[in-house]
Length: 489
Image 1 (cartoon, rainbow, N blue to C red):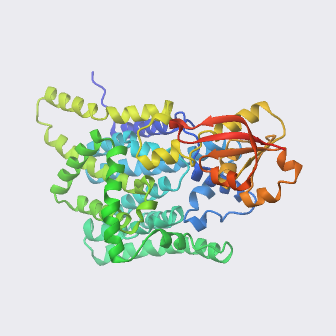
Image 2 (cartoon, rainbow, N blue to C red):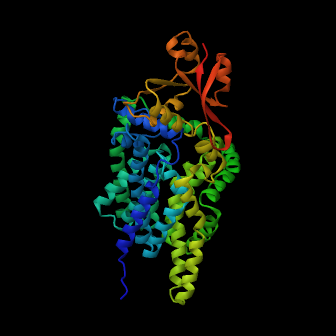
Image 3 (cartoon, rainbow, N blue to C red):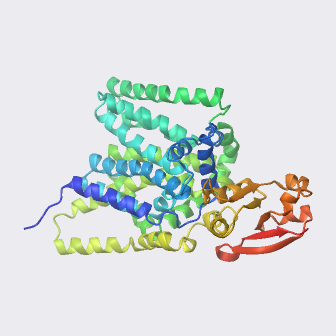
């Protein structure tokens, strides 16, 4: 007797697998600069200072993390609560592909998203981009359902919530705001009922967002990161054309590296097949994806364009891929089962590099193959957490009442992320100018100074002090290192 699993049970299994792949050995990669700042800000919420992140165009991830007491095991907690949110996005991906195409597309979308390195790598971090990605996918799914059933008030609420939550996740979520309108014109009939439902959704989103904006402006004196966004982007046509020329190869490398060539090229073919069918569904997904990617490429300064900024568009591409693959699979149902088994095996072989990436992320993250900028930012360069974790653990376990000085706030924040509030180790940031003023104070000269080489070389030379090395922690690749030093009397 053959036991046939119900589709709902299969989808539940995919969520369990998703959780496991994201949570397994979650703190293997040391915390990098931005993550440490987010944990720092989440702790400040408990001191009635909740608005620090808003000026950087992010807020939700910090407030959400603060709810879970980010003081003990803070790195694991901060990353785990992010995965609680991204599970919503993952469920929306599966539900969208299943509801609007087929159950096969739902299973394929879930399987691909679990494996693709792009999602795996960044969803295991405490950064705002996975939050933005979650609410962009939730908006895509809920807007599609609203276009089909515009009378359901709960869908209007969900669309409005997705709009508001996305905006407080990251200011660049602005590019997804047209999605409800696009759904009305592609999946709906652009009739009065659909347009009224869309208008109601925007009104709900505005009502939810307005109090937040008012509090941020009046109490926190924050513009939600609009000023920062304007500094990092351009509206000049000639500049945008130039940036397209430079940024397109950068984004392409992000895709080929973080999808792996084995998934990216077959995935592009699957997307082409999905688009070739010229359905309302594919038009609905393609339009906001193109708007988002073209805006990112044209308006972003290449110097500020990071791989994680593309993450919200990855889920949309995965859905398109799943539609293309499912369309082929459904046409092969009449074929011999042995042939289909062979094709399935070949397809699984193409996922092997992604599975290999996953294993490396769990066991040896310093050996991950990443785009050059990401390799530097998360592993080999001064923004990475390598060295800081080792120093924090070493002194926390072996010394009492030790003060560790750093020359930048990011160093203090990375150390603090690995220390509990009752630790006898005190990390303190002293800028070079303040350090100079305190040189006559014996409490300063008795402390240990952490020097980040080569970043701090200029500052140390300017201070003109003699340092005695105590411990050295080289980062992977030996391009930079942290040296714990004593200040010579």
